Every structure is written in structure tokens, then in C-alpha cells.
Image (cartoon, rainbow, N blue to C red; front, side, top):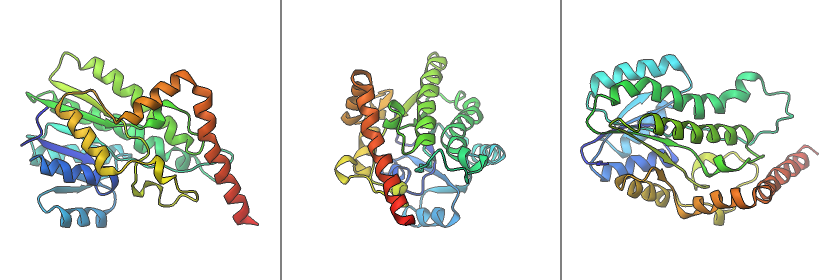
Length: 262
């Protein structure tokens, strides 16, 4: 895929992987449209990258996606790439009865339903382009049940399965389907966690995005670093061991939370 002079829509583009995508895609000569829920964050992104275009939008809300489609395709009919990056990740104890149904569903609504709805809304437009692409951001956690963040884990597993199905259905079209699969990445996603991930297990965000862009330019369906290949192999070879290893973090988090209540 060519990036120079392409018009790219990035959801959740005001921080972390999204903001780094803005930076590196701008360097590639792409025209960038950024969406996000936080108006101040959108303004800060615009200050850092004056040439980008911003829209306040919540991908968990179907009506806002419909409005986004109308606004973007009217103002930028040349749009040919969408990157579904918007996401939230929370540490959740599934025995916590204080979480209402809307709360417990919020990660599904943003990470999984938001991705599916964005694709469904924009696909007819992308099919009219000579060269187009959809990039869905999943996670290494899609290949293992991560008990500390169970809803996020389920949502990203769903994104992975959906992206594979989407790629098959669009195989005879001009729309290429990519899956960006980051491992743990050093972003603000974990800012509020009571237990911070080990820095040695986390990848620098610029390196992750660099890997993704190189893979995209080479038309590699899965945009992933070597660490993800290791995780996928381990999930097939020793799945129980991998899950138990991840579950140790949940136990540590619970211990810290119980200690803080005493």
C-alpha cells in the first residue's frame, strides 16, 4: 500500500499508538484525520501537528459514527484508509458487583463494537476507491486470556477473529485488510493501574508503529513485532502456562488492593 498522498482516518489518535501513528504517517506524506472523545486532547494534537484535521467523536456511539461518516466523506471524499485504533483497557475484578451493565460493557462498546461499526459505516465508501485499506488494532492479549483485564482480552480476541473474517470477505475487492497486533506498549493506557507493567516487558511506542508502517508498505496482513510471533507460538504450545503466568498479575493486583483497604 502507498501512504504518500493517501488520506487516513485514525480513531483514538490523540495519545499513545494513535498519536505516534499521526506522527509517522505524517512523515510518510499522508493526509491525516484524527478522531477522539476528548476535545482538549484533540486541540493538543492539532497544536503538535497543525496539518491534521480533527473531529470529536465517540466510536461506541452509533449515531456519532453516522455523523462522522457524513462529515468526513463530504469534506474528504478522497479518504481511502481507516485505522480503528480507539480503545480502552481496564483492570477489572469480575466479582465487583458495583459495576453496572453499561460500565462492564464499555470496553466491548469501544474496542470491538466500535471497530465493527466503523468498518460497516465506511466500507461502501472505501469500495469506491482504486486502492483502499482497513487497519484494525488488536493486541497480543487476543491470543491469551488475560485475567487482570478480562473484558479487554475478550474484546481484542473478537477484533482478531472479525478482522480475519473481514479479510476473507474482501479478498476479491480493492480494500486490503490489515491487523495491527501490538504487545504491551509504553503508553498512557496503564496510567491508572495500581500495578504498573514491568518496563522490560513493554515495547516503545515509536518502535511498534515503525514496525507496523514497514509491514503496511509491504502489504503484510499482520503488522506485528517478533514478540507477537513468540506469544502466538506459546499460546499453541503451552497455553495453560501462558495463562497462569498472566494470572499472577491479577493476584498481585488483588493483594495490593486488599492491602490499601486495610
